[in-house]
Image (cartoon, rainbow, N blue to C red; front, side, top):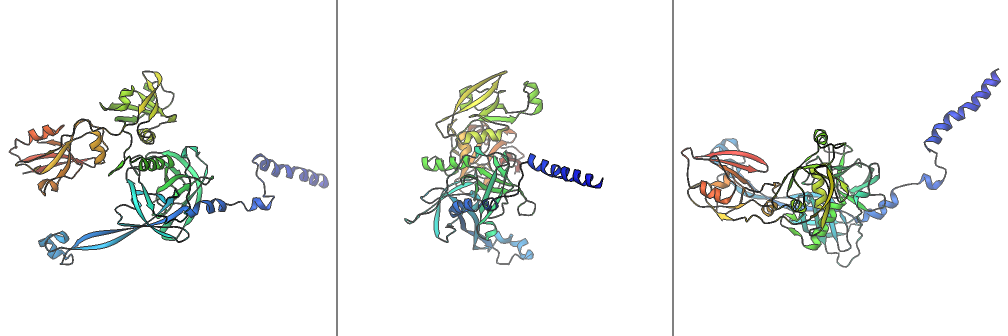
Length: 474
């Protein structure tokens, strides 16, 4: 009997262990080549083009002759008051970048080289070059540097569309974290089209769990074909170190910045991108039900600027934009990103649900128009705005002063002809909303209301950086 049991166990045990392994295609490496599988060949191909970036800036501070003693500062106004002495100090920023062309063109993050007076690019082989910033686009947090190769061959890598990525794909992040030297980390694509982060103006990122730490900013995110699919930009962290949640700017946005530099479509405020002139909101489940949609998808158009190219193409308030150039859109940030990657002068195809019917419209990619007339005016008189230059708000003015507004009317402070009282509460790019209870929609409105002073003085409402403040001046 015992022999029978032993025989049955010998027959059953192999079935218990072989079954699950076979079902999942798991196997012990059978060949030496399989045991040696590694990312090393990919790293050798790409890492020579990943550079360290050292940015140096000179900062001027005013130092109190009283050494910031609180007793004296209460009389002399602290370090910016009587007798303060200007002192300069040097700040250094450290980051990463990647060479994308044989002529020494480097892509990095704008925040890495912000206000830099001197920039050095150091290759992994220890060659060092002085670089100049040829374009800085704060809205996308991307910057382009160029260095003179001095006739030497320099390595570079190609870019590939991030649209080819899928969640779960393997990726590598290469950079110089904490200044310790070039480091490679691996991970997977954790998510695509992350758009609720408020990191830059477009808020559209590739999320990865490849470890990204301070100093990695500007380095490339590499796909398994050795091409750049993103530029590492930010991490989610409670301690300052990597927590497995990193974000990269998609290569499509990088390509638009490079194309803008080549075509000369950039200004003092970065890349001149297509302007839509729409206000929209994400389609919620409640909105989807009211529109008889099977699921919440797309963005609902809430308002259209009178000069909007989308309006001209046939888009209406109440329409739902489902996709742009075949790519589904789930919120306004994604629609904004998709349009931002279309070259000026070309058209994007919007898939729209309008009054229960699906249709496609072709929207032209145009630069922000300088309409209506900006009517720049220097204000003068016995009022707080004496010496301030103001202009009517229009899309071109909004771009120049980095204003994320789609309002058709308003008045913006665009300069000061001399030092004056207004500089204490007003800055360039601030919007004057009302004076003494009178809404200000045009420069002429402001000129008229300043002719009459209230017995209470001047009550002014200013919008600065999206925040409104009410100021009473006597």
